[in-house]
Image 1: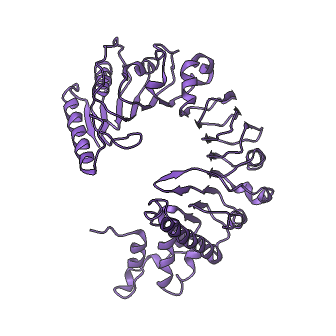
Image 2 (image 1 turned 120 degrees about the vertical axis):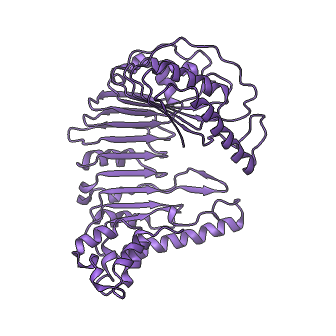
Image 3 (image 1 turned 135 degrees about the horizontal axis):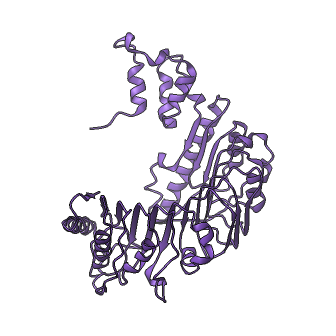
Length: 458
C-alpha cells in the first residue's frame, strides 16, 4: 500500500469539490502555509500551485531549498564507466542544473533557512550564482556537496574552489551552519567564515585539498560543532573555542592542539589518527578527561604491538563507540581495556566491518573480569556471530552487572566484496542466508543474558 505524502495530505484537505467546510488549511495565513510547504520536497510544494489561484505562487516563498541528489534516479550513473554511462550522467547533470535554475528564478521569498546543492557537477555549471543567490536570501544553513561518480564507486575529487568574491556580503552574518564537501576551501575562506559569521555554530569541511594549517580561534567565536575530514594536505589543527561542544576529525596523523575547550564533550576520531590517540593517551588526557562521548575507529591488524592494556581513568565518559575494521583474525577483547577505564560508562557500541575469510579465526584467551556497575546499554552493529564477537559479547554480559539492554544489528558490514566464512564471494542469495544465520547467532547469545536484560535484534 502506498503511503500518502505530505503533499497528498495538503491536496486532499484543500479539495473543495467534496466538502468545502472541511477546507481548514486554506483559512490559514500565508506565512503559516509557507512554513508547511517548506517541510515538503520542492517537487511536492510546487504541485500545490494547481490547487487554486491563491496557492499558485505560495510555493515560490518556501524557505528550504534542498536540491539533493536523492531526488534523482542515479542508477544509470553507477553503471560501468562507458560512453553510455557518461552520456546518462551528462543528461542528468543538465536536468539538475535546469531544475535548480528554474526554482531559483521562480523564488519570491525574502529569505531562506536552508540551501543544499548535492550532485555531480562540472565547471560548466554556474555554482557561483547559486551561492550568491543563497547569500542574498540571508541563508542560515548552507551545504555544498559536489560528489563525483565514476563507474561503480563514488570517488572524491575537488575541482570547484569556493569563490572568494562572495566574501564580504553582509548577509553571511545570518549563517548558522555551513557544510562544504568535495570543495576546495582555502585557508582564507576558512578563516573568513570563522571571523565574520557571528552566529556560525556548525562548520563542516570534508574532502578539501587546499587546507594545510587550521587555527580555530577568535573572541567572538560561537562555534559548537566542527568537523574536518579527509583533507589530504592538512598538517595541523589548533583549536581554542570556548563554546565548542562536538569535534570530528577523520584523516591522517597530524599535529593537533586543544587550548581552550571547556565545553567539549563529544569527540570522534577516524583512522589513522585514532592510533595516535590510543598510543599517546596521556598526552591528550587533559581534554579527553572532560568528554562524555568518545567515538574511535580502530583496526586490530594495525597494532603490531599489543593494544594498551590500561588507560587513565575517564571519570566523565558516559558513551563509548568503537568502529572496528578487522579481518577477523584478532581478538576484540583487548579493546575492552578502554571500557575498563570508564567507571561510569552508560552505553557502549561496537560496530564491526569484516572482510576476507573467518575460518582461520583462532581461539581467544580469557581476560580478567572487571565489573561495570553503570553500563546499561550495549549495541553490536554488523554482528556476524563469529568467535571474536561472541567472546567480546560474553565479556560484556558477564561484567556489566546492571545491563538492561543489548541491541544487535546483524547487517553485514564488510570491506570490499562480501565473503563468507570460507572466503568465497557471496551471491545475493548467500548474503541473505548469511544475515539470517547472524540473526540465529544473536538469538543464541540472548540465552546467555541475565534475567531482566532485554535483547533487541534489529
